[in-house]
Length: 311
Image 1 (cartoon, helix red, strand yellow):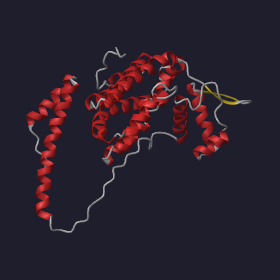
Image 2: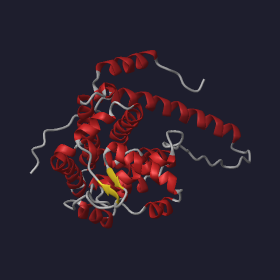
Image 3: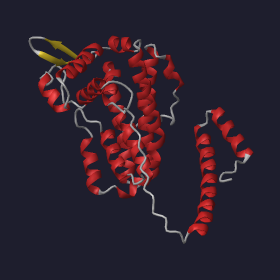
Image 4: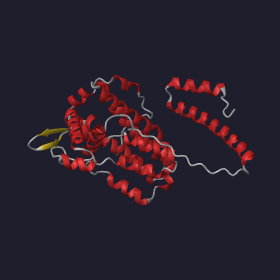
């Protein structure tokens, strides 16, 4: 048998899961996976001794996962991408979106697909199509966001988004620790330039950089696909009433992560990145619970959010 479960270790793991003590849960899982690694190492050594003279070609394994596959129609994905561009101030509120023919050419789809995407933006409050003018970029008022929570499609989309935030909160810390030694001064300079720029989300740039620096292909694939689900336009929509305050708070937590990196405090750097995603998860989760999506209450915040007395 390759793996041998220690009943006591498994019992302690179950007890930790029931305790809601996240540090204890993390320790129990670490203990479990450590025991797995010891067993795997012994097994590999045993197999190696048995077959080391055999001419067996080295296998190449690629981990593949498509987070978007089978979720919904392509026009919905285009609508999400347009929302992300609105969040990034590529398309400013009050301005016109590109013509339908231009969008169709950019996304390599038919005009009818683009019209479905624009209709979706109209429905959720991110755009207003006026026949004589075109489609004007809008920011949705809170009541539209609340109405979306009553729609099954948007509810599912929002829960997937929150789950992606939760997953990123958990995995970004070990990713940052592993990649920290490969972050060069040019990359740090690019990160620093993002702070204070209107419409910029420095955390998004940092995550993209860390994904590129991740050497393990399966982990990089998981990060890439999870990152696709982190639509920054959602963050914009859910905080329409207090956008400046919430975005500023996120930037301050991100800035703390950056300062820890500059000081070569990798533990602080990685922890504050995890806190950033926990903060987004907690604030948006609480917001949408208030507007009727009670299922979101099941999503726990992986990291405690510290008091923000940051100078």
